[in-house]
Image (cartoon, rainbow, N blue to C red; front, side):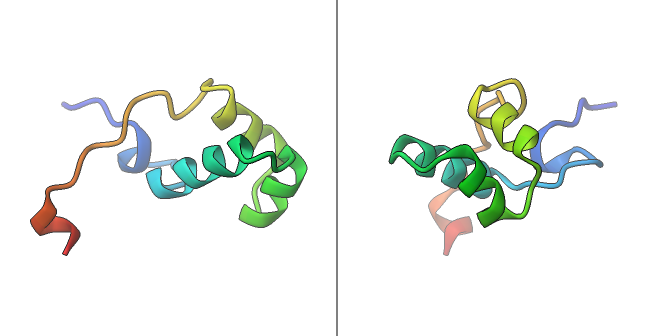
Length: 68
């Protein structure tokens, strides 16, 4: 049985794209509360993503053909 993490985990509520965008917004200076409202997620969820407490693995790379 494979270990599931990230988008493939059964209880995941975010995608790798959302996680990356949250981190980019924070790097650009957006406050945590504003990011939480933008993505309609609890502030604690966003804080955990930004602090790498969750979503710590690198996202799987998609091939150029898969991206379209």
